[in-house]
Length: 68
Image (cartoon, rainbow, N blue to C red; front, top):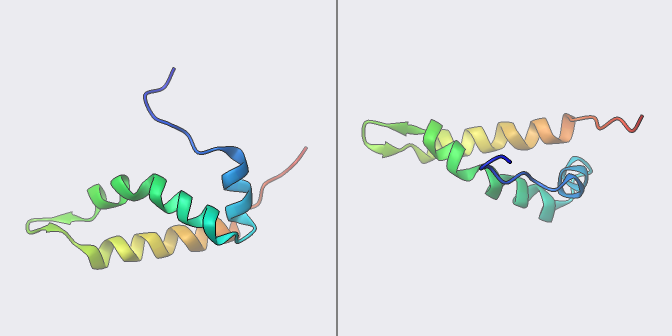
C-alpha cells in the first residue's frame, strides 16, 4: 500500500469537466509538492508556485479521460 493518498477518480473526472470545487481539490492535493518545487534561497517563491498552479489547471482542462 502506498504512503501517498490518491485523488478519487470522481474528483479528477469532474475537474477535467471544469468543476471548480474539484479543481480546487486537485490544487489542494498537490500544494505541498508545488511549494517544494517553488523554494529558493529565501523560502517559497509564491509567484513561481502560482505559475505552477496555473499550468496544472490548464493541463487539467486539456486532459482527456478515455472510457474504454
